[in-house]
Image (cartoon, rainbow, N blue to C red; front, top):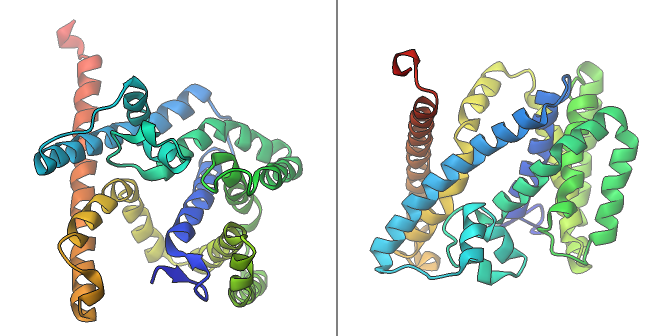
Length: 309
């Protein structure tokens, strides 16, 4: 299904909203109890995003070159936009001239890069002035909402801030308190789902998506916190989510061009989806391994051992 929660929330938007919340929560889990070194922070973000992105782009561009027997031509602005992983984001904002080299990454990559630039400020704000930081993020949202596209990075700050607040204040709920929260969250999801079409009809689909995503995040976080196996499996799979994000649309597009999807029997469609998941998983593992090999090679090249001295 493309739409969930009473056909009122687009599945892709729901996933993206969860990504923003998870980004805030994971950043606060890592840096909430210690001082943030800007150099270390930005170095880690750079290494976690760009080498794998560049490898995926080269692979996708090479396949595209062989398949279409040509490649788009663009100016230096478009090349720089692609090099920085901002091309999909700029295209989503309406600057299609900067996306002629676009292959992988989608708009979310450029958006999260800009949010990462602000992340140390948000971490400091939530640690020192949580109420003021929360109020400021919602004020910015209210000022910009419907005046800029929903993908504009400042619009998504409240989701990131909520993830930080959850990790600071709510993730330790247990016992009766946890049960009350779970019941309340489930009720909230049901009520919002019933009201979903009203939100959509008034042009507030993003607001509905943010609310429901927040409640689903709380629900999953609370009910899974004591599931040791779930946590271990999730931690293992989490390492492959970024490469999967980089490759999944290209694989989906390649496969879907070979079928007329509305006429495929459901059993065949489900099997094709399973094949798609397997291919994405395999490509994610290959991309992760290749990225590690290349990074290790560069580290060895830039920091030769004592024998080379």
